Length: 159
Image 1: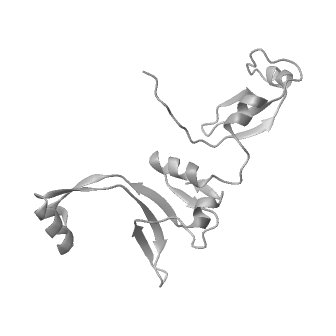
Image 2: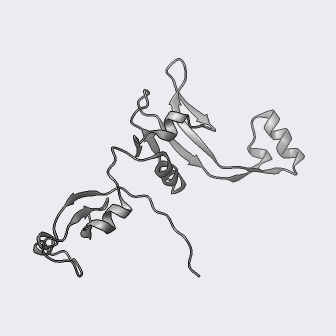
Image 3: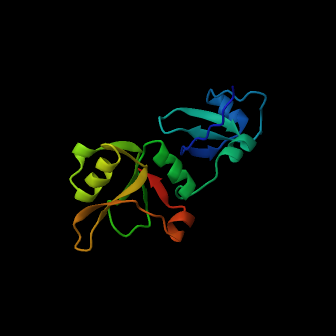
């Protein structure tokens, strides 16, 4: 049964005609001569040629990633950050859902809730931030929420 998939990847590319691509040894299918396309370099160093219409349906030029692309990267287990954040070294990661056991709990309120639930409780996934507190000390923020600016900016990057 077919399923839907979505991918998030960043590539480097530059315009290149089919004839130049063929001269470099790339396969161009039915595209020849002055047919427009792009030489594409993937993160692992693999290079290929893509026809212009195919490439431009899949990619657009950006200075960074959109918020949606950053979320997809988080779901893939990657860390993300914004170039526009004023604190250096700040980043986000996704803490996946898990089961918390009573014996792990140091917080008395949490332990009480877990005990009332039979010794285990489901912890929902959350976005965490590595940041700094008001005194400049390194800190972790659990349950980070995006601002309007965070959601609309395209300066996200995968670390």
